[in-house]
Image (tube, rainbow over all chains, first blue to last red; front, top):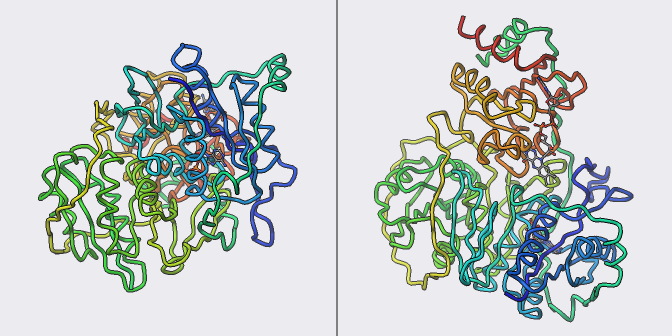
Amino acid sequence: MKTILVGLKRVVDYSVRVRVRPDGTGVDTGGVKMGINPFDEIALEEALRLREAGLADSVVVASVGPKAAEQQLRTGLAMGADRAILVDTEQSLAPRAIARVLLALVERESADLVLLGKQSIDGDNNQTGQMLAALWNRPQATFASKIELVDGCARVTREVDAGLETLEVDLPAVVTTDLRLNEPRFVKLPDIMKAKRKPLDILSLDELAPGLAGGPTPDAYAPPPVRSRGVMVDDVPALLGALRERGVI
Amino acid sequence: MARVLVIAEHDGATLNPSTAKCVTCATALPDAQVDVVVFAVDGQALGGQAAAIQGVDAVKVAEHPANEHALAAVLAPQVAALAGDYTHVLAPSTTYGKDLLPRVAALLDVDQLSDIMELLGERQFRRPVYAGNAIVTVTAPGEETVVATVRTASFAAAPGGGEARVESVTLDVDLPTHTRFVGLESSASDRPDLQTASRVVSGGRALGSAENFDVLYGLADTLGAAVGASRAAVDAGYVANDLQVGQTGKIIAPDLYIAAGISGAIQHLTGIKDAGTIVAINKDPDAPIFEIADIGLVADLFEAVPALREALQG
Ligand SMILES: Cc1cc2nc3c(=O)[nH]c(=O)nc-3n(C[C@H](O)[C@H](O)[C@H](O)COP(=O)(O)OP(=O)(O)OC[C@H]3O[C@@H](n4cnc5c(N)ncnc54)[C@H](O)[C@@H]3O)c2cc1C
Ligand SMILES: Nc1ncnc2c1ncn2[C@@H]1O[C@H](COP(=O)(O)O)[C@@H](O)[C@H]1O
């Protein structure tokens, strides 16, 4: 296989507890720590392992987002990706639009395999990979915890509600990653230096995928209902008493 | 008027309770007419189960040998072929629905909404984002078909006793062969199902080993509870992946949730926000789980859990 395309989304770091702005127009992202969507880091790690096993020639990382997403792409290059593409836009796009952009990149790069995260941890959508597969008219294997490439096919084990399901899909295909697929490597300092010299193309959204629809409009954001701190009990008999008092046992 | 198509989830023999939850969501739409579609090889018995859900007008049974396993690439074109008659297409926000529905939306060339938890109108919904740290109100654009997954923890299952009509449908669509089912390694046990159980006992990293989880199984058996786990416990291999509760695992709403040796990371808490009573047992008095627990006990779980079991039995 020649090329694996990996989607890297810039998101608020998973350790940040975001707050809704008082006027309800969104969440406060000013000054908060940003990073690569954790599932995408797993996708990139898997792509690198496939390349290192001699099963792919090159790994291209792509992000659709603001200029600042160059940071995440540079990290991807430092992890080991060969090339990076930023599709530059300030617009916040719905998964359907992102899938269209990724489809244009798939065609541009003649990708044989697309590895995406199963979900972005900001929008919690869990849609883009499935939509890309449909638009591309190719197979999808979502929530992967194991990927094996054999004879032009990918054998993918998926984390589903009933357990672990294995599918065989013809390539090219879209695979989305779950948490237990691998543990992403750490970036080493010399690699960060090397990554500065790797190619990072910036493409204009309007040229690559003109006329994208806006998607569902967010009308307002609100903080979730709070669950307040309850009672602390001293020992097991007191715990039992509290449970009985609440009528749950 | 809303004409709603609910996509049934099943294992070939039994309808998943998530279907009746989607029906509850569907019937909450103004002036709704609700149909359920069952994709199967032999779907008559399943169609009967769907017909018994109150609030359902008609059940469509689409039988095809390719429907033996729920492959999104095979099911999506069939749903898309049916969708023209409907204003809304709904599926549960289970791994089945999450896999299938975006593919349907893309074929219909519309957007999709994930995890709707509340309806504000025919096209306006509320859904959680940022691991549940914010709730966004969204409006589906224009006139297009609303395609959405339903956060099952937010809706009670519609009761049985209904008598909808059941009809077979034949769909004239090309089904791809590029995706093939190889196998399912099910970790099914005799214990209650995590997603529907009214009581859940969950363990975290503190359990330390698969063997040590026995202490939780003991309490779960006494309570008739399902067993759940944090990501750390699943990653460490103490329990199977399908027991993970949280943002990227299962979102549940039991009457009673007992968390033992779980610190209470935001990603975990988002999975249990709708639980009735949350009990936390943790030896660290500063563990974040205590900030949301209804009843907290600072203790070593290896002492407290067996003691609780004994007290319940005694
Ligand atoms: C993208 C992403 C998605 C994630 N999704 C999920 C998800 O869906 N679900 C999820 O759970 N996590 C998820 N996580 C992980 C999450 O951030 C936490 O790392 C995880 O929940 C921690 O698990 P834990 O509470 O078991 O372990 P820890 O945080 O290590 O907590 C262990 C706790 O046990 C207590 N303890 C230790 N010994 C004892 C004892 N003998 N008796 C009593 N208490 C004891 C300690 O005080 C501590 O509070 C996700 C993370 C990321 C980045
Ligand atoms: N703006 C983006 N740029 C690059 N990849 C993206 C972008 N948005 C989503 N993706 C990919 O699609 C996956 C699923 O995202 P979502 O459907 O938003 O939950 C992510 O894990 C990424 O791999």
